[in-house]
Image 1 (cartoon, one colour):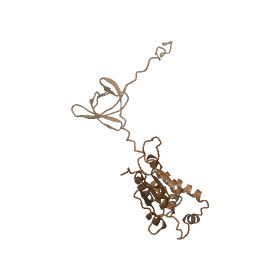
Image 2: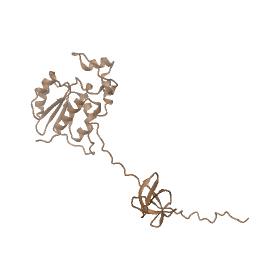
Image 3: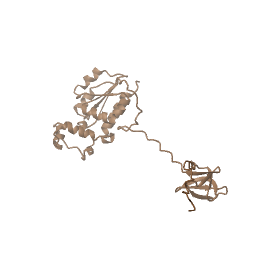
Image 4: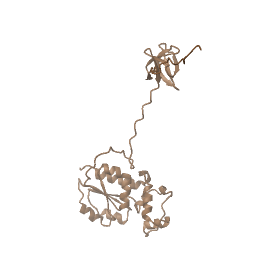
Length: 271
């Protein structure tokens, strides 16, 4: 036989393969197309190719293929530079505000925000919880506002100890409106919404309804709503309703506006 041994036996498999260096193709870089000898400045990119312009103003397109260009006399593979990453959008809280960076636990402010009941407090925590913690504001349920004027006097709000109160059904002529008018302190702000109960401040569309059922005047609102909807366990219904609330968009505007006013009031620096 002409060849007694394998013709590849003499090939040194341990010899490293020559690796063509890679470079990002940058605008203004001068390179030469290895195949044609066309030399020019990189002036653009198009469909996986690079556009070169020579010193006479002539332009040609060359595909960005491996080992296709000469850079300073060295064969290189040009790659199109990666587009810069879009700036990260700030994270928003459920209330729509920009989320603050994590911080150490803070001592609570002397001021407070009062709400009528536990459901109100849970709803504020779900939407404004991040904001309230960032501002070190504590929300406390009153379990009703029948003794509101006396409770405010006992709290004794002041310049560094502001008090905000969220009241349900705060409309002209109601018991709630009369109690609010009885509070006279420049360091206490009472804000409310027109809904009989905070449940009603959740948009009914979150439950697939166009509107909340109408409860006849003089009938307890929650009991009437549960009866109209066939609800036998009000506590379970509230958990279900609360779970459908993900942001301030799921709440009626009067409630959102009032809570924002109270947070701004309580966190305002002393005058």
